[in-house]
Length: 527
Image 1 (tube, rainbow, N blue to C red):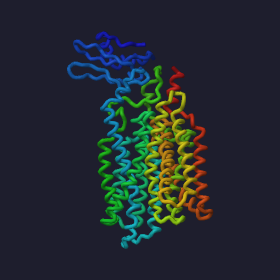
Image 2 (image 1 turned 30 degrees about the vertical axis):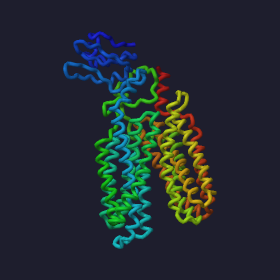
Image 3 (image 1 turned 60 degrees about the vertical axis):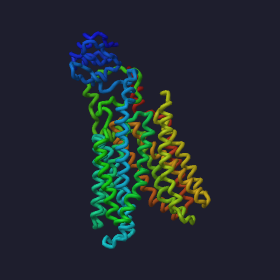
């Protein structure tokens, strides 16, 4: 083991050697203690342990007043000295991460403004005789977006693996803002259809960018909580859309119902560009390095080989399509979205069929319950990960939470099926369904991000998103046919059956380790 000398001469010698000295340390394949040495008249160098790979990435920098210092891009958690932890708990890091998160949260919530704006301006569009629209033509507009959106999530997830998440989120939001404004300036139905399809394609840029930010800025023990907070932006954006777009359309006409969300989204896109940061490393902080072993032996692979970026096809095929766990999560997501879309689209019709007058009020608790479910499931899974002694897989712990929430969803669907026509009881049950349902919706995406390496997170999220929206599409016509042909009993049996399939798909993964855990164990075996 190389120990930093407390004598100034030895430290200065290594500093003078620069890259050559560091390369020599790397070739020796030993654990080292790095140091920060300042060449002053009466200063003893301060030493901190760091593994040799981090030394390779050290930056030699001369400071003012004759000081020399070696700083490391990443203080190694493997060294066990807590230097990374101290940096990650610093006020500057905490402030930068919170600003990044809030910018991301506002940006993704604004995507929901421009995604849902049509739903709340469509009634006034039909009233505009100059457009010549009816319910069927408006239905065509509303159908084109999810088809384009599902495809876009897949494509943008793959391409986003090589794009700055800040540029992806800010640029996508600005583009969808301009599309909303252009939509409000148009009157031709084919043009409206094309613009709304383009809006669907642009909407898919948001989620992969946010997933990358969350995996780069948050370790395993915190990621579930903040993933849940991010998912809550869906609810915030969904809540604000009728207020902003609906009010503007009612007061000033349907065109302003599109202009208002577009203007807000455009302003937020600028804020995202200014305040969101791609990664800790780009801001001068050490990277988030969860799951690292406590001691680490340096390998002798060239640095260039280690830093070689995988190609897009590799990320898609090797990390996603050939990963059986990604497929299990994707198919599970399919059925979760069948249930989610089946609840949001058909509960109100079920209640009306039972003679409930204010069915919209009864189902209003779904989003509120969903918000609480997203936050709680993330917090619970993080608690389990934080208290994991290393004997259990982190992803498997989250899978167990998914299974608990999925089982609760199935049970609550059965309760709603036989519930009496009492308004407050129905509202509470619907809110409880939202609570249980939105847990798996949030956590499955997180699990998919944690079973692949970080460069492949966007590709994995894009693939999962594409499959999930295929599930949402199957909650439309197929469920309608089931209700029309076999009645509401068959509808509830189908929904509960979908929950059962999710449980079966999740069962083999209750011990699944995250990618970082698997790599840490592999490094220990080769030590």
